[in-house]
Image (cartoon, rainbow, N blue to C red; front, top):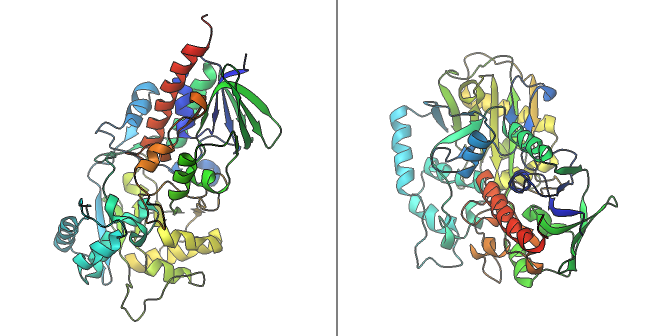
Length: 464
């Protein structure tokens, strides 16, 4: 008999959900990092913050609209979720904050030009090539259109127009788990351990070998550990599978490997600036500040961003949303969080944390223009998901333009298919077509694979 009923590779949200759903079986979680959570990581007192701030996944999108992550967190783990009702947001253009009527009109016009693919959309067209000419030369509308790049992780010029809006996803209410998502993964791990599950941290998987029907699968780590199980669920992120995968014996189907190569993982980094006190406009009311670019193509000050660009140039030419935890957190604290996505996020890699934080503080101050000099940040944090060897980016992107074989939403289905007569399965946000790039997709995929493995184990294990 194999040592375990199931081995789950990766202790992120999808792996922990799968282990939680396989309660009652002999389970082992194998995680390359020395912590659980994967691309969920919550900073707090240890980093000097007054309250938790999520550096990776942070919200339950569609909290009241059916996202299964909401049920898992509230009903099964018994946690509270904070919904920041009534928070206001300000939009900043080149000349400062937009008046409420102007901002409302701009958002309405932006909604009218929101891009949706049509059946005759050319396969080689990008969203930028079809949407931006429709918008015209208003830099504010262009800036609003490019907010889509932040969550996507790639520029509009790289997104395939043919599949724009194909996935359904969850939208509507955004909820923040109290204590952060780090508390969610800690509670999930406690449930898994209470049911007898094991966790092996600091073990990077190097080989996954099918031993054949009735014999299971062997997992070998770079640290020399070997585990055998009737079934294995891999939640290895897409970009790791693409650039530094373990060895699969026998090799996986070309349909799987080609789909992995066609897919993309996007770039998104967060800059956290925590202050002694809140200095920004109406901190008890304003929950967000959207900083539209100060320079766009055609302007005298516009430059093509590349590896020699300064941080000031990068920020000036990028749309940057900034969240205020003084307004949106369950326990208010004077902290700002700026999102840097797509091309700009990739360019941050050559700068230090201190350089990025200082430049972001200076840029936000210059845009919000307080009446007196604000205090310097007492704590600053900058993520580096792009260079993290166990993530290699943020999350899977919408369908990207490809050279050669055309990518399509079918790729998300192909990378979710089990191999080796079901003894090897795949989960993770990149394996859910409708909700990829989200915690919801991770939860759904973990639950999907747990159901499938449970059915497999019921067939192959002798009756108790």
